[in-house]
Image (tube, rainbow, N blue to C red; front, side, top):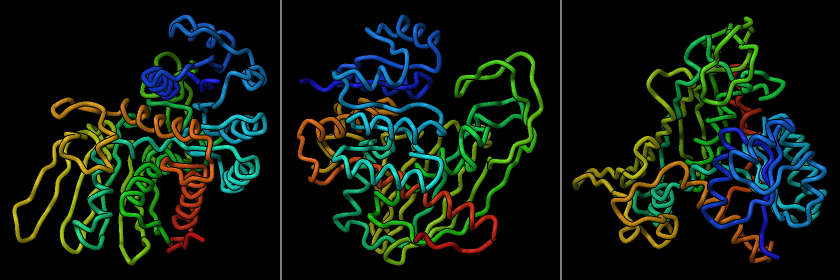
Length: 378
């Protein structure tokens, strides 16, 4: 039977999943929204064949091979667990769960049931991020020594900005770190091949009181209408010092209140023989720094990329690739692996184990900020 997907959640990121699956020709058997009305509206608007009335109906559909979970964070664990127990593979948005107890449970369950669990750290899948990883792996910048950068946004700049992620019962006790900080850490540790071993963090809630609208607000959309004042306990900002395997040191700043920065992930890796840097708001350029020769700039062109990166560039040189394409490339890896049906083979995509590692990071960051000290990642 051909691979079929079911999607839970049709907000901003759920629609990104749908588009990526459609571009790959993977059949989306149906969707499940947050209410029967929203499901019906999405089925009509997105021209889908089926809307499920419940998660039980979705999981009972034998034509669904994998479930894409694109719901608020507090639902990830229970939905992923139910999908695994129904014999479905899972592609879950990050964070994988609300805490490490939940994420560890999902890792163990997927392993025991011999099913595949993936987490949508899609930002690995810009072609030049794969090229950066290849450059580091072949020793072209020497031994990585320093890793630094930031992930900055401005969509929560004003007290009138609102999203469900601001509610700890829905998004968790950490917000900016879990939402965008884990993307940065996942990306640089994957590129360098060096895991984080310890963290020292500073967190700040820059806007302590926000105006919550009485109606529904989509991610990245402005609220309108009547509001209530709500005390905010999760962080708008974080800076995290990192100690990585092999003696490398790092620092990352994340913010959702930096005016003019829409979704700017920037990193630089400084090695013993050279440096490289990349910025997600200009994703088709990779900078290489040298001491004894001119610096270079690599423009995304599959004919000029390393063999390891070339397959993740879908279009010829001069044809830009961006955020929607990262989902396509991640899902291509994921479904190709499922179709191979040999689940003991190494997995090239971010897995449930990856998601568990990032939950450990989040908990260590909170502990570090509260106690104002370095915390080891056990």
